Image (cartoon, rainbow, N blue to C red; front, side):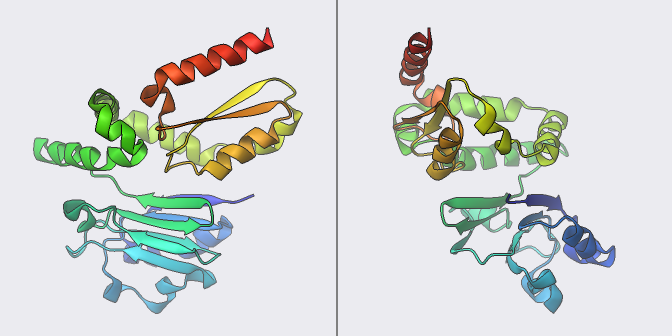
Amino acid sequence: MLRIISLNLNGIRSAWSKNVLPWIVAQTPDIVCLQELKAQLPDLAPVMLAPDGMHAFYHAAEKKGYSGVGIWSRQRPDRVSEGFGHGEFDAEGRYIRADFGKLAVISLYLPSGSSSPERQETKFRFLDAFLPLLVSPATQDRQPEVMELLRAIATGIPDHVLTGCLEGMMTRPDSRGLLAGLDLPALVIHGADDAVMPPGEARALALALPRGELLEVPDAGHTPTLEQPALVGDAITRFLTEQL
């Protein structure tokens, strides 16, 4: 089982002085996602470049003592990408991605909008820039109403709700081992252009279910029910009808 943990350091040098490395090692992670480095590469001690023998990759902010993200991994990734092609936020060191075969792991540090109206506007700009990564290119070109809906959903989530969701995902157990015992019809719905969940993961999920079926939705990303509602609705209706 692959173990991925995510940690906001609030400064890597400060966290190091508080023995963060032994704590991380005790969690036996395969991959570690880090946020808020608050340091640039020349500031990092040699041990931070190969912590406990892991491969370490960082995307630091241009501004000193600010933001910054990183990824540590036991296995060397096939590729590492810094930034997502947006000058303002790439300069702030908010995104780094590591690809391991069909698996992509992203360490992302979103701007907080709680401190002032100006920072809230910054958060809105970030969401406008980042949301296209979650949907199909076809959705971006042809369905502006879906993009507006996703933006409204993202900006309407209170910070404490988002934090609770992330904490829940962080601590929930891996239940994939139970799938083989679920002898019931199951439909796995996956967007063909999903950049968050690789196609191989969706196929593996469907194959792990004894009576699983995979629906790969064309021209859809991570939100196929919003991007292709008619197609998905028809597929669910057909699936349920066949089970009756």
